[in-house]
Picture (cartoon, rainbow, N blue to C red):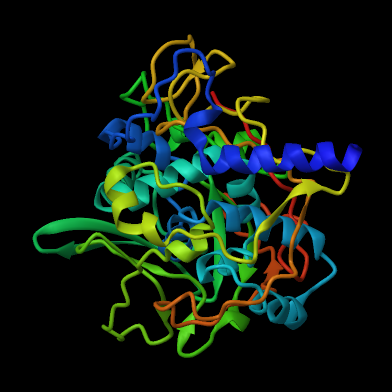
Length: 411
C-alpha cells in the first residue's frame, strides 16, 4: 500500500506541473485560466534586476536555460550528486546528458545553476518572459545597466569589461569577461547599484551574496566571488557561453573564439527540452505547444523515500499568478498584503531537491540545432585577489562547485 500511495502522489504532482492552472484553490475556478498577459516595463525591470549586471556570456546562458526549467532542476541535482567528478571527467559526463546546451553550460557555474533551481518560480517566470517578449526583456536589462552606470556602480574591473556600443543610433552597454576564458559572478544589492527604485508596487528581486562576501562589501556596489576558469570548454571554434546582439535584440547561441567573427547564430528555443512544461502565453503556446512532448529523460518525481517533488502553494514560494494560498500576491495578481516579487502567470512549482533524478534515458543528441559549441563541464575555479575592486575569494574547488552558496530572501 505504501508504494501504491507514493506512486499516486507522484502521478498527481506531475499532473499538477503539466496543468498549473489546476494548482489553485478549487472554489469557483473557471474551466480554463486566462492566458498570461505580457509583463509591463516595471515588472520586467524587477524580474531582471538581480542578473542585469552579469557579463553577457553568462547572462545569455541564463536567459536560454530559463526556458527549460525542468532541465535546470535535473542538472542541478545531477551536479550535486556527482561532486566527485572533476575536470575532464566531469566535462565528459556532462557531455553524455541530453539537456539543452545552455543548461549543460551552466554546470560549469554551479552557483548560478543552484540559484536558478532554488529560485524556480523566478526562473520559470524569466523563461516565460524570454519566450513571449524577448525584446522587452533585453530593453529592461539595458535600462538597468544605464541606471547602474549613471550611479557610478558599473565600471570596468579586472573581472569584467564594460563598454558602450552604438548601433543604429542607439547606445547599448555590453559587459564581457576581462579574461575571455574566465567568468566571475557579480553580487550586488539592486537598491545600491541602481539607486532609488521607482516602482514601489514592483520591488526588485534581490539575491543575497554567499556568506563569505560581507554585507559591508555589497553596501558599496558590486562584489565578485571566485572565478570560473572555462578554457576547457573551448570547442569547435567557440568559447564557453553565448552572447547578446543588443542592436537586433537577439540572444546569440555561441561565443566565437575569433572576436572578428561576424557570423551571428541567433538562438532559437527548442520545445523538446521543455519536457512538457506548459507555455502560459497563448501566442507562445501556438508556436511551440504542438511539439512540447515529454522525452525519455525525465525527472523521477519521487525522492529516495517517495517524497513529493512539487508542493504547489506550499512553503515560502509564491504561486506564479493569481492569489496565493499563503496570502501573498505576485506582481501581476491581486489581493493579499504581502508583496511576493514574482511577476507572471498562474502556477507555483516548488521542488524538493532531494528527489532522485532519472538518468537512465537514452541521450538525444539531435535536439539542439543551433548551438555550435559542444557541451561539457568541469571548469576550474580559482580566486583572484584585487586591490580597490570588491572581490572576495571563496573556497573554490577544481570542479567549480566549492564556493559557499547564497541563500534567498526578498526585501
